[in-house]
Length: 325
Image (cartoon, rainbow, N blue to C red; front, side, top):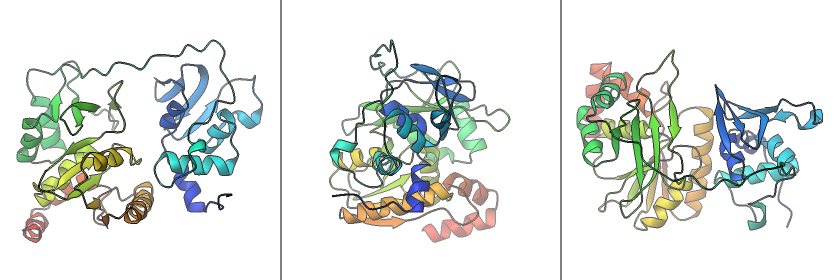
């Protein structure tokens, strides 16, 4: 059966998906170069802001020189525009496509490409203490020391030795770490260092599972999950940070913990976050889960911004705490 025409909203949602993840899923090796990314197999390609690309080469026709995620799939996977949009929506978990659409072959095979083995997943060495971790999370991001202590004692966050980045660990149901991301504590000129640890499994995310809970609270970032826990003093429900707008970590979490019956989406208040929340709410409602959309209040981009504003306004913070009791 031919798929229906996509809406403009779906097209914009497809163009919000991380292009580096898309390229990697096609078999390319994505490498960082300065403030952008390139492909090890074709270093004339540049990916900007993880959302658009350009190929700095005169060998190729102007129609295949750059554009959006949709243009990337049209150029490198031989897709039509409509097919590319639906493939992207499926890739990010917003809707399902036929199985045959999921693994397109590369249209342009790169000469002398050496298939690299999957990198071994090795956690960064830990520092002797967590001084910079506490300084950043408590002083700069306003997360309470009690909440930070909770995650440190569970072994889910620690300070790495070399650059003092914070490491956020994503464990499976048996307590094995399958995913890890890092966040710098020394932001320079408003720029934050963020990256995933090489070799990790993106089907997992930073999470806390609580056996007596049948609800999971879902955010985009680990610090937002910590902020949610601080705001609502929630030590009862399970928590999960996607680390992106794809729901692969949520799919894994639900499969490992079938007792979960309800999902609370606490995604960002920006346009991509709102669109993703609406799509995921619909998807998981149709799968039989109770779903709730709980974005931060108007004027706050995410839960950490809400936390910081609340703590800088003591009266509002006290009122909020009373509401949570």
